[in-house]
Image 1: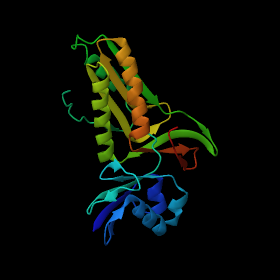
Image 2: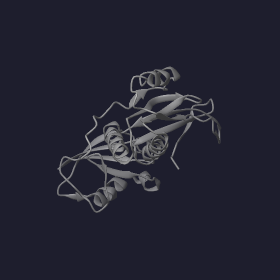
Image 3: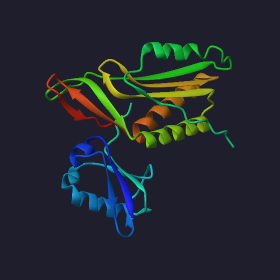
Length: 79
Length: 149
């Protein structure tokens, strides 16, 4: 399955890119994805972030549908 | 069932000008069922940080999700409070210290709903809108990422 992954704010600096396409065999939960992305970018381990799936903040136990849009969101600073 | 309110454009490039705010107020003079407006303005503070004073904040956002969140906040505010109308504007890009980055404008027949709704909306934005801020510090190009408390 293909996932479109976006990195926001300081996380784009950590990963060196704002977005990438991610090929995955089989289905993942948000928790699985969190482990994979921190394996790929170990610098993320020290950072606080939430994961949105198709524009919704999602718990680690949630499944990710194929073709989903995933976003890694650092702490919010609006206002 | 409450009627659905159309999604509105929230993000503006750069600071929100006092002139824009004044014109927004003026444009409500014809809505004569309004008895109370509450306005919240977020202004960039010159915080002292290690390495210098904050000279501005550069905002970015996950715009598609933020627009969904703003729409949900609007719907929740209309459901919860007796409101005539409600406008939210937030900056993207650079907003220098002393300028306005958030403008929440709530109108109601009565003051209590206007006060309470404006606080509710600002808190919801701070907690749930995926907006990110880079505080520019000092003269040397340093920065740090802001985090709402």
